[in-house]
Image (cartoon, rainbow, N blue to C red; front, side, top):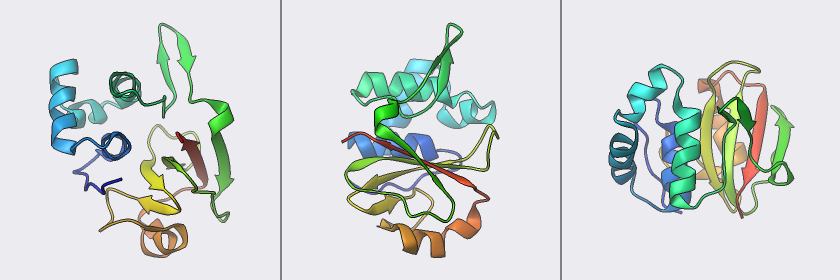
Length: 151
């Protein structure tokens, strides 16, 4: 996986770019072409969950987020999803997405992971979970950690 730096509220888009091995600028253009607006425009209105699902479908990735389509809640594969508390160390074997949140708030933060390393688009590069917690978790008010493993 190649680390990619996000701009603004592009954490979910950066995760999709890293997991699909597509350059982030290419995905920005795909979003603009597919949805008629930029990712950052959609993020202002919290409209990125459905866009994330559609992008994952286009790129052949499994669903990474929860979203509603035609009044149906679509969720990631529960057999590949695990939840952890803030002080627990998650199993980051394989590849997938880490989501952190402070409960039922509409926003949180998403990061990719691969073979024990966190790929946070707001960081300077990949690092192990403990190092990420020490360096970056002060930037986020979170209580919950959700891991969606894709392989």
